Length: 124
Image (tube, rainbow, N blue to C red; front, side):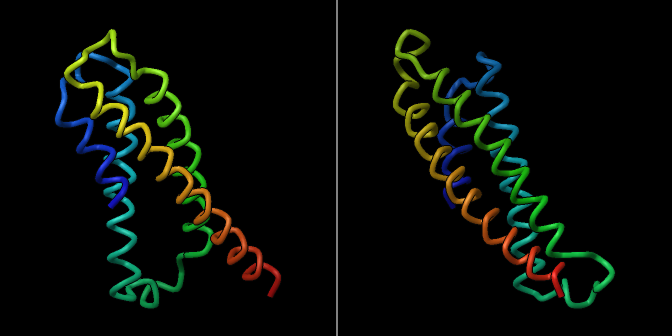
């Protein structure tokens, strides 16, 4: 839900005039789609039907890459928000920056728990 907020707040503006917001949109939409995809896989328990895939490693790689790229996107988003660019879109961009950092912290926590799960799986 928070990732959805990030890209909808930016998508409602003229973000395409500023390349930095294009990068933030790419990261937000890309990881939102992948998160929904993995949510469906875990909710339907499809992962139990495909035991050849190391799901703990996939989860760790997904969450780790999401954390790193969302952190970069959040920093780019925050550094690009200025009142001089476009006063009309300032509030949406500032809110998207805030939520990008919130999503980054969620992915960081999820990366930590994925690492704990991966580590306990590899020790067995």
